[in-house]
Length: 444
Image (cartoon, rainbow, N blue to C red):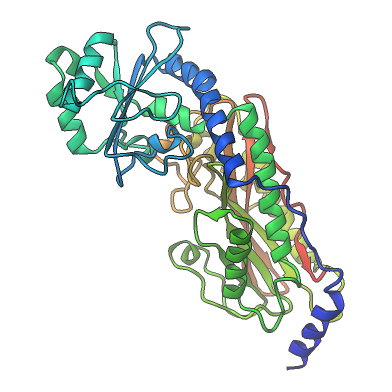
């Protein structure tokens, strides 16, 4: 009870000094919508032609039904469309390399400013036949549809719609149907210059929220629980008008006989615990803004009465986590696959005396986004399929990993679990808003 009393008093004493993050300005919903539409138009004019030429695809069909949306179509819809309407068919065609893209919607309406309505039910009652007519008129070399064995992001065409498409096409056109996997992944993973600027703001907001939560403004040691802090993060995100794409996790590691089960933390949420002095806290959370996502993990330490700095053994442990980060980011080179980067990073980290686990993933329109998978927590030998996908420029990643470190003072092994957003420009990789360089102290 004495510890609880001391820290309740500290809340009052330090309240005027506690971290009060000044978040970057978050746009109004109307301004967000306008910006999203501008970015979509910009991406359609600059990103998509390059990816279509790179993959050798001259026609891309994106077909989706309301309430069962293709992951790709959600990135093609205007800001005021929350979902597909009835069956929405988008046709993107490039007559020749360098030509302007032609965009049509085989739907009852224009789909935003980009996809103009190309179907009148009064003239042609059968929507699928109208789609087939357009394909016949264009006579493309390839007809790419969203089917994929390795990327769920690129596997949005459902079986019933595929069957209807094939039934509507003449035999000659059926033979041209191919997977749009590489095109879809390329579209989803590639970021524009404006999106890079937005990501800087987004990551800054995420870091500020974490820092504010790791303070006496959100935590009363001896009173607050890990679940209290989880819901504080949820409430703070909601208060800002943002969303989280997964329920946050807060857990503790401490100098008691119980071991921290890292593998269990992936398969089951950690039990609720009261946050105590001497605890090493860890948070995992992600926010969504302007259709982009973050995924961040950081640490804080709750000072014991009489302590004025983080124990040296935890400082050293944190440095080992950063070394694993460095070993991984050293591997980023255009054309290397996720599996190649994973195995090289693990080999070098282990040679340096570290105990790493690497499970890094792309970040973007989805939290676990399209692009090269660089390990999974339970697949440290490589990930077939998505791990064989190569690294391309102008892509973003959540550098997610951990280092296992034995703490002599606690007589147990802990995990320094880190995750930070980084951008690869084709030459180098850099943390979008920096990385956590040291453990937060509570209070500070």
